[in-house]
Image (cartoon, rainbow, N blue to C red):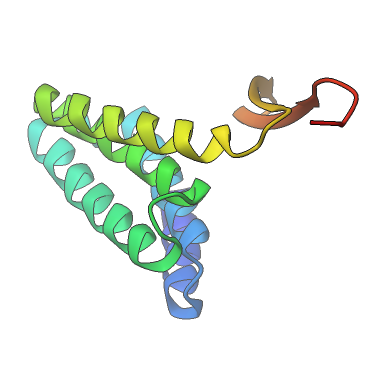
Length: 137
């Protein structure tokens, strides 16, 4: 599985598909963790370096307010927490939360809601928008 996801990651990098790279990296990390390959400090540091690189790349490509950047930032915060850099992780999550609030407050009449669904091969987030009111300001 890891070999397959590494190929996907490499192809995504070649074509400049940042979300594909992020997804492949996440799947590689999950596969490695399940087989015991990333449950040590060296593995966590390597994971952190990848997350920092992906977050910087996402900010440069999409900007700070884009959904892929927020997703990459949350992955980075998790990696920071795993290497016991809790204060830095907390600051990043606070920054991301502020950005999300600023972006979603522009969508008047809508609330962002996510549903976590378990399916055959794992878990997946789905976003649903619920319209509030009668469509008038």
